[in-house]
Every structure is written in C-alpha cells, then in structure tokens.
Length: 328
Image 1: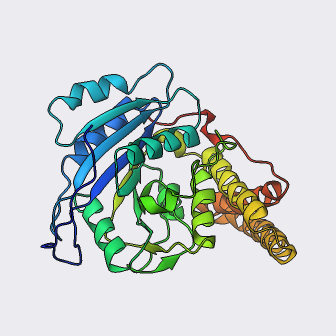
Image 2: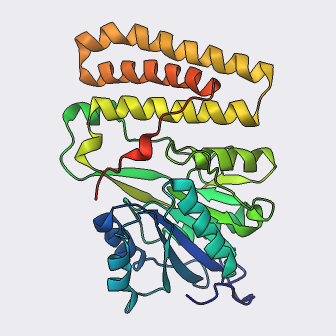
C-alpha cells in the first residue's frame, strides 16, 4: 500500500483546500461475506465537493485462522484503492483497531475513517465526513448508522424501533462518537500511542473510552447527518435476549468509562440516580408491556438492564459481548 500523504491542492472547492490522504480502517473477525460486501461498496464512493482524496483501505483480520485473507487477495489485484491486509492475532477489537491506527499513521495518512465489517456506506459517505471536518474545523466527525435486516424483522422489532439511533443536525457538537461511522484527524493520536484501551478486549466500549478522552481533552467532535452508513442486522440479533444483553453492555461500558475518566463524587451520584431512574422506568413499563405488546415488554426489560448495567459499570464489571460474532 503506497503512502497516503498528498501535496496540498490549493484549487479545491466546497470548503476543501487539499486532496487529503485517507485510510479507511476495517477491523474484521470471521465475517468474510460482510467484509466482501463492504469492500465492494467502498469502490462506489463518490467525491463531488472537491478533489478526490488519496484513499487506502486497511483491513485488520482479528481471526487467527485468517478468514479475511482470501477476500482481500481475491479483490486486491483489481481493486479501485490500494488494499492492505494486516493480521492481528491477539483476540479483541482494541488490538485490531490499534493495529489499524499504527498502520495508517506509518503510511502518512492525515485522516482515518472507521467503519465496521457488517456495514455498507452510501456513496457520498466519506465525502460528507471530509466536508464536515473541514467546514466545522473538527477533529472528529461522526454520522448516522441506519439498519438493514438480513431477514424480515418481526413486527415488534419495527414497533419498538430498537435499531434506530439518534440523529442530529449537521454541525451539532457532541461529546461522543463510535467507530461504526467516524472520521478522525490523525493529530489526535499524537499523544495516544495506544488509543483504544486494550484492557477491554472483548467487552466493547473502547471507542466510547477513546472519544470521551478526546472530548475531555478539548478535541471537537461534530455530526454530519449526510454521512450515512447502513448496518446489516442478522437474525441472531432480532431476539429479546440479544437486545437486553446489548442494553446492559452499552450501559456498563459508559458507566465504567465515566468512573475512570470523570471520577467526581457528583458525577457518581448522578450516575446512580440515572441508574435507579432507569430501573424505576422499567418497573413501571413492565406491567404495561405484558398487556400492550412485546415491543413495550422488551423496552421495559431494556430499561431494567440499562440500570443494572450502569451500576455494574460503576464497580468495574462489564459483559464480554464480543466473545461471539454475529453474521458472517
């Protein structure tokens, strides 16, 4: 994979003043079909707001069996972008993401985009991220992740809108971001030799931990509502069990990160109050859900699980959700 650093192009337009070097970083584990789908979708990226950046793709295979190597080898000879395969045998998302950062920076990438191996971006995705980063003088830009179901989702899943995440107006400043759709300026890693916390190998939340640290350090995180990614949801996630466990995991991750990074007594008291409030909300919704439909029942169980997860995270306990890979 060639260098991703490029010379400034003063003839840019639409707020972009240079053709930038961008590394698209993909951590993958035993999802060859999803990875191939993603890589093919990246070939359809379009750039209409200025000079096309120097794009390179970094695939970090976190499977000791090397299941992603065949996909990369099969596409690499004729692929639109330089495609680099990196093997990271230590099991865990942060090891793979840190390997991607090291590889991208060693090749002079100015910008690092992260996307998951069960997703596909819209053609304007990267273009919109770069535009927002320039226009709002941001260090980090994130955007919406919309669900696509691999099988027909049950009616109660649609009614509960369990896979619909919050959206904001473009330019909204945030204190968080996630690596399923994000663009990061490489300068934020200057003081972070190991940006993703390797103590959390399988529990997830290392992106929460990183972006909270960046926000607290004064780095600017903004939202681009036009930088859209679609996530493919497998049938194994369309269950009450998965949704309730995911609610526990995300809440425990957030609470654990706050415990470490924002350890004030006032913050701890606020977190306990929120956790108890969630549990109370779940208790109120529980009988309603038993009568009104499964979507409200699952919502009540999620509230209970979120409250319990927050309390668990406060004492440093987290659930290793990523011991199991969903989809393929």
